[in-house]
Length: 115
Image (cartoon, rainbow, N blue to C red; front, side, top):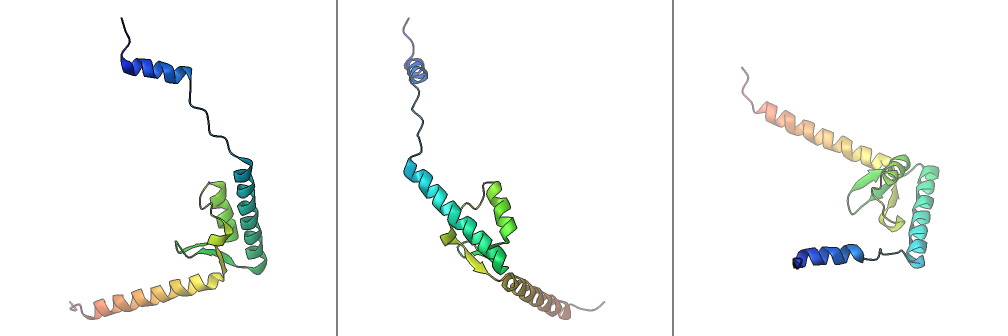
C-alpha cells in the first residue's frame, strides 16, 4: 500500500533535514563591533555620571540598568541608538508631571460641591 503524500514528505524531510544557517565571519565581526561600541558608551556614561536615552522609544537607563537588560537579551541596540543625557532631565520632567497632575486634581476638587 502506498503512503499518503504527507507521510512521504515527512519521511523525506526527516531523512534530509534543512541545513542550519551558519553565521558568517562578517556578521560575527559586526556583532563584536557594535557590542564594543555600546560597551564603550556605557563606560563613558559611568565616567560622566550620565544615563543612556533612546529617543526613538523615549527610554532612559542607568548604565547598570542597560547592562542588566542586555544580560536578559533586551534592548540590544547599537550605540548609534543611544544618547548620553543627564538623569536630572528625567527627574525634572517627572516633577513637572506631578505639578500638572496636582493642579488638575485641585481644579477638579474646587468644582465639586461641598457636603
